[in-house]
Length: 226
Image (cartoon, rainbow, N blue to C red; front, side):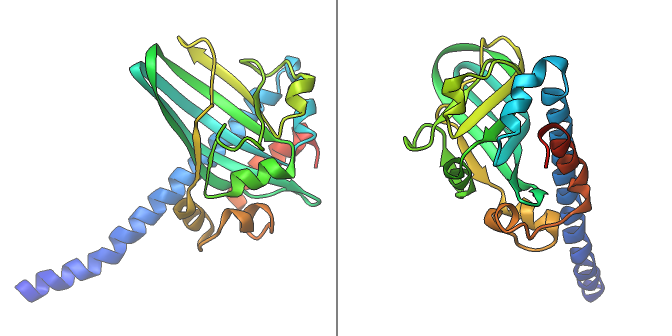
């Protein structure tokens, strides 16, 4: 009986692992689909002309469909993101990232934001391709936040390496990303593409392909060209 139970467990273990991989792939695809909707929300409106003009200059974009921020003295914000690059052949497939931060101070409220970080320089793109990048910690990489919506680009912002546009609702007055840590999700890359893939392989070498990412790249091309 013990042998039969052991054999049954051994037979089920691959199925459990497979189930975990399928769920991870589903979660990754959900994030990609929500990123597509965020691009539409941010750049489709009639008042988004200035935001679209910035996107047209992009070398890449980090799209965060839901950055949730909450605080009561101790605060924090976080959410999943996808990074896409833009080269001679158009937009690349996405690499997966996390954005998170913690803070302490007099604060109270809850905020839910869609955020797109538009990468305008090679320096900005290379910074995001590191396994971890802390906004504000590297003085050579300038990150500018333009307004609380999708309009209002400025000359100062366009001189930045990375410009963020946010669409938010809640009790906090604005969205601050200073001190936020952007970290690569290598496990999600592997699950989404079926093999280990570094962010550099996906974004710079354009080696990753998943048909589920096509709506995202097509939507970016619609609003930014190429």
